[in-house]
Image (cartoon, rainbow, N blue to C red; front, side, top):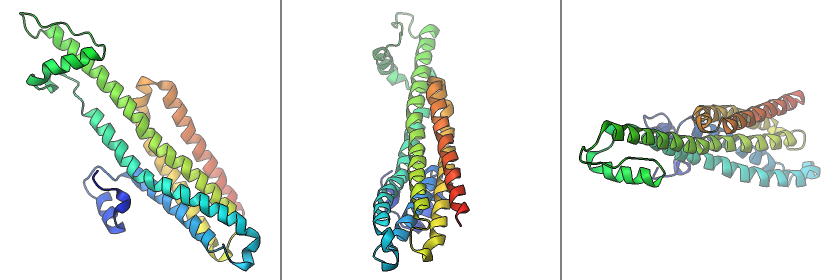
Length: 247
């Protein structure tokens, strides 16, 4: 990716999102919708700060403004983080897994690399490349490929998990603004909350998509990440319910 998606105009971004390019995709969309939620929180705070009518909430809104700005920046970074993670996952899946996937002039280099990584590959003797040696190479290639996929999948799951965590933190700010900010912008608090909840639920799909590959190498980690995502969704639902209960 030569250019940050954050640098694109709205029209350019939407065209890229709707194109045949692999990125941006659902993960980027999830981060963006949450970033908009954080931005709306900032807007509400900005329209409250300095208003004599809301002087008692001045300090609270200044604190919320500062926190929301940091979260908005992190969520905006999540747009590009998703694309970066996807690129690494794609590269891992493209790694060779069969002997026939290796170019003939690269066989010696591949064998040397596999041996360096601890794989046992027999020496080529006067019989040349035997079936046994090819099987050894293929077994090593498959193990390396699986390990690489599991490793990058962890990062690919962590990126949307971060979006979920940031979105939950911003959602707490939205709830804190209710009844403590400019009443003319109350509807914007609800929109912000819905954006953040949508971002959380959308990002959770990207977490889940990477868990099968992680589970093959580390079932406990996959289970932990799944539970973490579920906990965030549950907490977000409670916050939305709390916000609606105070309408």
